[in-house]
Image 1 (cartoon, rainbow, N blue to C red):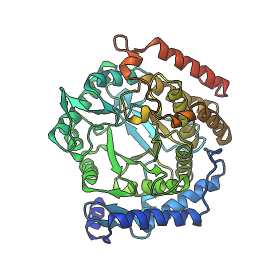
Image 2 (cartoon, rainbow, N blue to C red):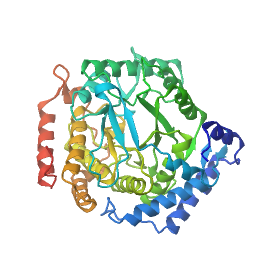
Image 3 (cartoon, helix red, strand yellow):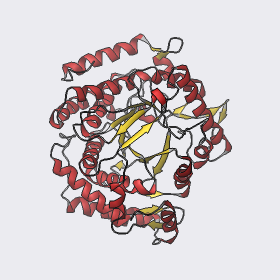
Length: 459
């Protein structure tokens, strides 16, 4: 049997009582540590795409065991949502492997990719969650939409509306989220792609904005929104309300578990176990139609560190081999627009995600903390993903390429001020909506270097 969503809500009120401190230490930290030891999990910084399938199989079994033993902590009630034997496993059997987003000629089909899949990844462009000034919002979205390789669209979060600050959990959040989706729909019409599917309501940090756009004039049933699993393996009624609202309306749920490498689960192997458990649990608790894979490094934030890349690869392989489902990998580099490192970080993420069995979403440049992203790196993200498939890179070959790419940018993690680059309006000419010559030149030079590094199928 699979519990209904109402069953899960009941368990949030009836499950065992526990403090958050005890949950974090006794359950997440200690149980994960024991499972890492039990399944003999370790990682090698010189192999960020594991070539031994037994590694991903052991990660999956450890993650499933963690999910079964732990459950999910509900912060509002201080109780654990637990699952009966077989419920999570039965839920895995019903995870969607095919999903259509968008409408008409602009609709796209996502599939459950596997390691070395011959089907190219879906290219989902945008800088999800990044703070965006209102005057830059539409131009940035247009910079992604004008790229033919882009299949689906997402966006950053509005920080102001009509000059007024947007406050979380207040009426301004409703106004900002509706304004965001209005801009998205208008940009799609201007680009001649009105039916394109989107992941919206990024300006909604609580349930308020999310509920306000569940309407065909805003987010359509063919679109999607986020139902986060909070750190680590926790939830609250605000996020569960997002899932509840979409059950009848029909909008697709994207689970999001931002597990920290170096956090409560420990280094890359422990974080991979927590991430795997989080996706298994999100399948039922978040009522997920697909999953966003968005681990971050505790210190460096970016998804392009060696440990995070390894974790992304092993988790994708774990599900591709043991529980096929639709997983989209978020790309959040440390660097920002008009830096070559941004393009190398984007390429490394795209190689790892594509070869390991994921789809591509991004780019959340400059750690997704600044409006320093553009359509150009989203184009490269897609081009690299397609090239990996056309060239039929093996996991070993993809690992070699990814390691070479890491060497091109790893120094930025030691920079005191990071490597933020410039704002979108300094990287693009807003009159022509094209990259400024200097940014275009950097892109051309990096693509040439990528071909010389072995990615010969790159257009």
